[in-house]
Image (cartoon, rainbow, N blue to C red; front, top):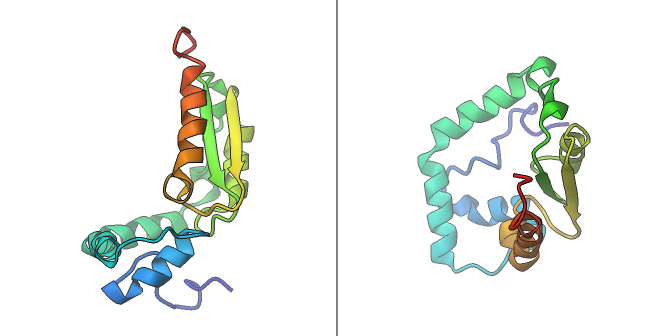
Length: 143
């Protein structure tokens, strides 16, 4: 059962600084060691946006199938890089695969052992992927 269907608070919308540890464990497979002050800063910023975050989640939950991927997505031929964490508990990896399946010129990478925020959990690997992707176009008119 979905925790939101059960009427439980959304753990992705922290409401107090005490929620920092649970929030980080949920979005990251292997949270990096962060100073408590940085954790509190991150969660405090999210708390300040609680109303907006709740509206956003409600919009996602109440959207219908027609609001998903545009039907003409394959018409986009610009190069795209889709990076997804294998252990993403926020957006299922199948969503990234589905997006990649609908793009004409895509490189799809699923990062092993990574959750929802590869740029934080595996910054060097993410940077290498981006550098390699962008490097393909440094002397090209493909973009």
